[in-house]
Amino acid sequence: MTPYEELSARFREAARIKSIQAVLGWDQETFLPDKAAAWRGEQLSWLAGAHHRLVTAPETAAGIDACEAAGFAADTVESTNVRGWRRDYDLAAKLPSAFVEELSRTTSEATHVWAEARRRSDFAHYRPMLEKLVSLTRQKADLLGWEACRYDALLDEYEPGARTTDISALFAELAPQIAALVGPATEISARTPADLLAGHYPIAAQQAFNREVAEAFGFDFFAGRIDTTTHPFCTSLGPEDTRLTTRYDEGDFLSSLYGVLHEAGHGLYEQGLNKSEWSLPAGDACSLGIHESQSRLWENHIGGSEAFWNHWLPRAAVHFPGLAAFTPQQVAAAARRVSPSFIRVDADEVTYDLHIILRFEIENLLINGGLEVKDLPEAWNARFRELTGLTVPDDARGCLQDIHWSFAGFGYFCTYTLGNLNASQLMRAARRDDPGLDSSLASGQYAPLLNWLRSRVHAHGRRWSAPELMRNATGEPTRADYHLEYLRAKFLA
Image: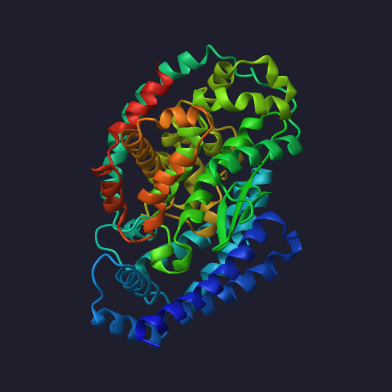
C-alpha cells in the first residue's frame, strides 16, 4: 500500500475503537444499570488509551510526514484527510496516554455522579467530582498549549481557530441587543396563556408523532433510532447508525418534540456526511458551531415556524386529540412563547443565548482560575439574575442542569450561539438560492432544504474551516445581524 493507504487504514482502525466507545457511551446514557457504572468507566478508559496509542504511534507520525511529502493537490479528499490527520495527531501527541485514560475514567464516573446530584438538587454531592474535572481540564489545556488564554486550547477543540477574545467580543455585542428584545417579546407572548396547551400527552403518542416529523424532515430510521435519556443528545456509532435521544413530560409534548427536532438536525448532518470517507477528516463534521447550526435550523427555523404548524397540526391532533380544539396559529404562538426560565434546553429562542453567555463566562472563570468550584452556585445564581431577572430556586435548575461538564466538555457551550448565528445566515442564503423554498416548506416538502444543506454543508466534511464553509455557502462570513433580524421578525411582529 501507499503511505496514504496505510494511514487511511490506521485511522479507520482507530475509528473502530472510537465507534465502540460511542456504543458504550450511548448505552451508559440510556440503559446502563447504576451498579455497572464503575466497570463501564474501566472499559471506556481502556479504549481511550488504546485509541490514543494507535493515533500517536511513531508509524502514524511517519505516515503523515510521507503523505505531506507526496504533495496532494489542494482541495482534494486526500489533502483534506492529510491536513486533518496532521491536526489530530499534533493535538493528541501532546497528551500522555495515562492522562487520556484518567480523564476518560473520570468523565464516565462523573456522568453518574452528576445525574444523581441533579436528581437530588445537591451541588455538594457533585462538587468533589467537578473539582477533579476542572483540575484535569486545566492540565489538559496546559498540555495542549496556549498563548493568550488557557481557555483557547479548549475552545479550539470544538471550534478550530476560534479565540476567547473574539467570542467574548461577539457576546458583548449580542447580549444587550438580545436583552432589549426580551421585554417586548415577553409582553407580546403574554397574550398567549402559559397553560394554553396544558393537558395529558401520553409518552407513546409523543414518540409516534416525534418519529413521524423527524422522518418527514429526512432522518433515516433504517440508519438510526430515538431513545430516552436524562439529557438529550445525538451520537453516531457508525456510518449507518445515528442515535437520537430525548426526554418526556406527559404534561408538555412540545418539550420532547423540539428535543427530537434539535437532535434530528444533528442526525441529518451525520447522515449527510460522505460515507465512503466516514472516520476520516473528509467524512467528519467541520466544527461544533456548524453542527449546532443544523440542529438549531431544523428545531427553530423549521419546527418553530407557523408554516410548520399549519401543516402538522392535523397530524398532531391524531396523536393528541385535545389539540383539535386549537388553530395552527394558537399552537405556533404557544410554541414560540417568550418567558425567561431556568432550564436552557427548554428556553425560548429569544432568551436562549443569554443561557449560553452565562455558561461561557462561568467556564472562562473556572478554567482560567478566576472562580473556584466551591463558589460556582453563588456565581451562577448572581449572573443568572443579572441576565434574566430570575432568582434560581435550586441547584437542579441552576448550575447542575447540564451534562457537558461531566464529560469535560469545557469550550462547547459557545458553539450553540455560533450555531444560532450560522443557522439564520444559512436559511437566508437557502431562500435566496431557492425562491420557492417557503412554498415547499409550507406543504411539508423538506427535501429541497435538506438537499441544499447536503450540497452546501454536509458533503464537505472538514474540507474547509467553519469560516470558509460559511463564506462558500452564503457568500459572506458569519454575521450576528441576520440572527437578530430573524428574532425581531419572529417575536416582535
